[in-house]
Length: 170
Image 1 (cartoon, rainbow, N blue to C red):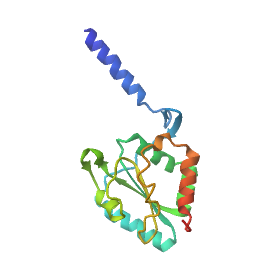
Image 2: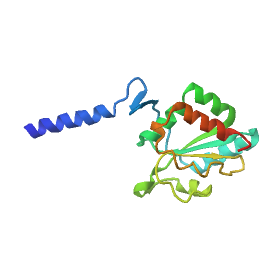
Image 3: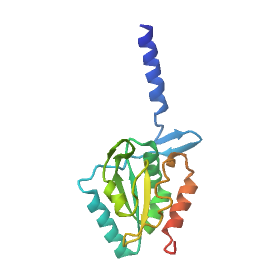
Image 4: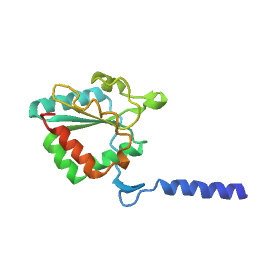
Protein backbone atom coordinates (compact mmCIF):
# COMPACT_ATOMS: atom_id res chain seq x y z
CA UNK A 1 0.00 0.00 0.00
CA UNK A 2 2.84 2.40 0.79
CA UNK A 3 4.47 1.51 -2.55
CA UNK A 4 1.23 2.35 -4.36
CA UNK A 5 0.93 5.66 -2.51
CA UNK A 6 4.54 6.61 -3.24
CA UNK A 7 4.10 5.64 -6.89
CA UNK A 8 1.03 7.86 -7.10
CA UNK A 9 2.83 10.81 -5.52
CA UNK A 10 5.82 10.32 -7.83
CA UNK A 11 3.56 10.19 -10.91
CA UNK A 12 1.76 13.36 -9.80
CA UNK A 13 5.07 15.19 -9.37
CA UNK A 14 6.22 14.12 -12.82
CA UNK A 15 3.01 15.35 -14.40
CA UNK A 16 3.18 18.64 -12.52
CA UNK A 17 6.63 19.24 -14.00
CA UNK A 18 5.16 18.99 -17.50
CA UNK A 19 2.07 21.11 -16.91
CA UNK A 20 1.33 24.15 -19.01
CA UNK A 21 -0.06 27.35 -17.59
CA UNK A 22 -2.14 29.67 -19.76
CA UNK A 23 -0.40 28.57 -22.95
CA UNK A 24 3.07 29.04 -21.51
CA UNK A 25 5.48 26.53 -20.09
CA UNK A 26 8.07 27.21 -17.42
CA UNK A 27 11.34 26.18 -19.02
CA UNK A 28 13.85 26.60 -16.22
CA UNK A 29 14.96 30.21 -16.36
CA UNK A 30 12.65 30.91 -19.32
CA UNK A 31 8.97 30.87 -20.07
CA UNK A 32 7.98 30.10 -23.62
CA UNK A 33 4.75 29.72 -25.55
CA UNK A 34 3.98 26.14 -26.48
CA UNK A 35 2.48 24.88 -29.72
CA UNK A 36 2.15 21.67 -31.66
CA UNK A 37 2.80 22.22 -35.35
CA UNK A 38 4.49 19.03 -36.48
CA UNK A 39 1.56 17.35 -38.17
CA UNK A 40 2.19 14.17 -40.08
CA UNK A 41 1.83 15.20 -43.72
CA UNK A 42 0.91 12.75 -46.45
CA UNK A 43 3.71 14.27 -48.52
CA UNK A 44 6.15 16.46 -46.59
CA UNK A 45 8.44 16.61 -49.63
CA UNK A 46 5.61 18.20 -51.64
CA UNK A 47 4.97 20.67 -48.80
CA UNK A 48 8.62 21.74 -48.96
CA UNK A 49 8.54 21.96 -52.76
CA UNK A 50 5.44 24.17 -52.61
CA UNK A 51 7.12 26.49 -50.09
CA UNK A 52 10.22 26.70 -52.29
CA UNK A 53 8.06 27.60 -55.31
CA UNK A 54 6.24 30.32 -53.35
CA UNK A 55 9.53 31.69 -52.00
CA UNK A 56 11.01 31.79 -55.48
CA UNK A 57 7.97 33.65 -56.81
CA UNK A 58 7.80 36.25 -54.05
CA UNK A 59 11.48 36.79 -53.22
CA UNK A 60 11.27 35.26 -49.75
CA UNK A 61 13.21 32.53 -48.02
CA UNK A 62 11.88 29.24 -46.72
CA UNK A 63 11.90 28.65 -42.98
CA UNK A 64 11.87 24.85 -42.72
CA UNK A 65 11.39 23.66 -39.16
CA UNK A 66 12.01 19.94 -38.71
CA UNK A 67 10.85 18.74 -35.30
CA UNK A 68 8.29 16.67 -33.45
CA UNK A 69 5.40 17.21 -31.06
CA UNK A 70 6.94 14.91 -28.42
CA UNK A 71 9.88 17.35 -28.12
CA UNK A 72 9.51 20.33 -25.76
CA UNK A 73 12.16 22.30 -27.67
CA UNK A 74 10.24 21.74 -30.93
CA UNK A 75 6.99 22.86 -29.27
CA UNK A 76 8.73 25.90 -27.78
CA UNK A 77 10.12 26.98 -31.15
CA UNK A 78 6.73 26.43 -32.80
CA UNK A 79 5.17 28.46 -30.00
CA UNK A 80 7.50 31.41 -30.53
CA UNK A 81 6.91 31.28 -34.29
CA UNK A 82 3.15 31.55 -33.72
CA UNK A 83 3.34 34.74 -31.64
CA UNK A 84 2.39 38.08 -33.15
CA UNK A 85 5.97 39.34 -33.15
CA UNK A 86 7.29 36.36 -35.08
CA UNK A 87 4.36 35.98 -37.46
CA UNK A 88 4.91 39.53 -38.70
CA UNK A 89 8.56 38.73 -39.52
CA UNK A 90 7.65 35.38 -41.07
CA UNK A 91 4.86 36.82 -43.23
CA UNK A 92 7.23 39.52 -44.48
CA UNK A 93 10.35 37.40 -45.08
CA UNK A 94 9.61 33.66 -45.12
CA UNK A 95 7.50 30.78 -46.32
CA UNK A 96 7.11 28.63 -43.20
CA UNK A 97 6.96 24.82 -43.33
CA UNK A 98 6.87 22.42 -40.39
CA UNK A 99 8.01 18.84 -41.02
CA UNK A 100 7.61 16.00 -38.53
CA UNK A 101 10.83 13.99 -38.26
CA UNK A 102 9.84 11.58 -35.51
CA UNK A 103 12.75 10.40 -33.31
CA UNK A 104 15.80 10.13 -35.59
CA UNK A 105 18.18 9.85 -32.63
CA UNK A 106 16.43 6.58 -31.69
CA UNK A 107 16.20 5.13 -35.18
CA UNK A 108 12.56 6.13 -35.76
CA UNK A 109 13.06 9.07 -38.07
CA UNK A 110 10.64 10.38 -40.70
CA UNK A 111 11.25 12.66 -43.67
CA UNK A 112 15.01 12.58 -43.12
CA UNK A 113 15.58 12.65 -46.87
CA UNK A 114 14.42 16.26 -46.84
CA UNK A 115 17.35 17.28 -44.64
CA UNK A 116 19.73 15.21 -46.78
CA UNK A 117 18.37 16.93 -49.88
CA UNK A 118 19.70 20.22 -48.50
CA UNK A 119 23.09 18.84 -47.46
CA UNK A 120 22.51 17.72 -43.88
CA UNK A 121 23.70 14.13 -43.56
CA UNK A 122 22.06 13.55 -40.18
CA UNK A 123 19.84 15.25 -37.67
CA UNK A 124 21.26 14.72 -34.17
CA UNK A 125 18.13 15.90 -32.38
CA UNK A 126 15.07 18.10 -32.60
CA UNK A 127 14.20 20.68 -33.68
CA UNK A 128 16.27 21.66 -36.69
CA UNK A 129 15.78 24.99 -38.41
CA UNK A 130 16.79 25.27 -42.06
CA UNK A 131 16.71 28.58 -43.90
CA UNK A 132 16.60 28.08 -47.65
CA UNK A 133 16.69 30.39 -50.64
CA UNK A 134 13.90 30.02 -53.19
CA UNK A 135 16.19 27.86 -55.32
CA UNK A 136 16.90 25.50 -52.40
CA UNK A 137 20.29 26.69 -51.16
CA UNK A 138 20.78 26.14 -47.42
CA UNK A 139 21.74 29.50 -45.91
CA UNK A 140 22.50 28.38 -42.34
CA UNK A 141 24.33 25.06 -42.70
CA UNK A 142 26.45 25.79 -39.59
CA UNK A 143 23.50 26.39 -37.28
CA UNK A 144 20.63 24.35 -38.78
CA UNK A 145 21.05 21.45 -36.34
CA UNK A 146 21.85 23.52 -33.23
CA UNK A 147 18.29 24.25 -32.10
CA UNK A 148 17.96 21.42 -29.56
CA UNK A 149 17.95 24.09 -26.83
CA UNK A 150 15.14 26.20 -28.32
CA UNK A 151 13.14 26.12 -25.09
CA UNK A 152 16.08 27.71 -23.27
CA UNK A 153 16.76 30.45 -25.80
CA UNK A 154 15.67 34.00 -25.21
CA UNK A 155 12.90 35.35 -27.41
CA UNK A 156 15.08 38.25 -28.63
CA UNK A 157 17.94 35.92 -29.57
CA UNK A 158 15.63 33.72 -31.66
CA UNK A 159 14.06 36.74 -33.32
CA UNK A 160 17.42 38.39 -34.05
CA UNK A 161 18.78 35.21 -35.65
CA UNK A 162 15.71 34.80 -37.85
CA UNK A 163 15.85 38.47 -38.84
CA UNK A 164 19.53 38.14 -39.70
CA UNK A 165 18.95 34.95 -41.73
CA UNK A 166 16.17 36.64 -43.69
CA UNK A 167 18.67 39.17 -45.01
CA UNK A 168 19.19 38.40 -48.68
CA UNK A 169 22.88 39.40 -48.35
CA UNK A 170 23.56 36.50 -45.96
